[in-house]
Length: 282
Ligand code: IPD
Ligand code: CA
Ligand code: CA
Image (cartoon, rainbow, N blue to C red; front, side, top):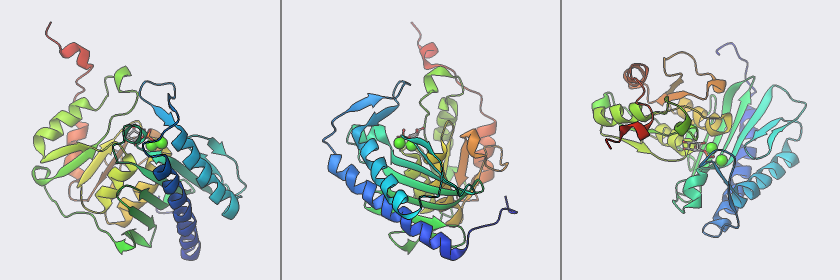
């Protein structure tokens, strides 16, 4: 990806500010609907929820982009693709990452807004309203939380690490459901958290609270912003086998750097456990 050109630092700063305005606006919508939802529906797959808060927050974000950058294409989780003439750019927008948490009033959720330039994530804003944490990063500009610089951790061994992962909505339909990896790494580390918001998981790797994150079955709107945070905070993002990250694979390994090889090696060398329905003895 090193041969991809970049927007100017001036433009990146402008895009960061627009994404921040949109994320804060969406965050206040999410806070208004907190504990007061009008609808919770399944989007087709069991457990994949959408609420009126997801839709209202996304509408708020789209208004901000319509006002400032109407020529930029958008891929928003609830609205799908929105065309624009500036085809080098694509905004990947998740108005509420962690809908299941939010619907249960488990306060771990975020707005995630990332910008891809020629396919590469270059701007990321993640706003976690309940934590009151605003994470921002752009390629070459560093990463911050509430405007203070952040850095990945220095943890150098799996035995000393705290990791995070997640389980995609198709987990009941496939053997490759991440259960085996979760068990094995729970055994090898100080713990593996299941946060329920990929954007917050990546932000926490960026700020050093967590040492590494892996997951499969994700979409660009889950990942784009958080990838920039981790990379700009000094971390590393690849596929499980350490090859360059491919957005359309939906599979990510993001770490502080020192843990990248050992964690990737475990992920590549773990056989699926299969369907837990088979675990019962009678
Ligand atoms: C989900 C969250 C979760 C991850 C799921 C995502 P949503 O996003 O990021 O942590 O495990 O795979 O789909 O549906 O809450 O926007
Ligand atoms: Ca999401
Ligand atoms: Ca979402």
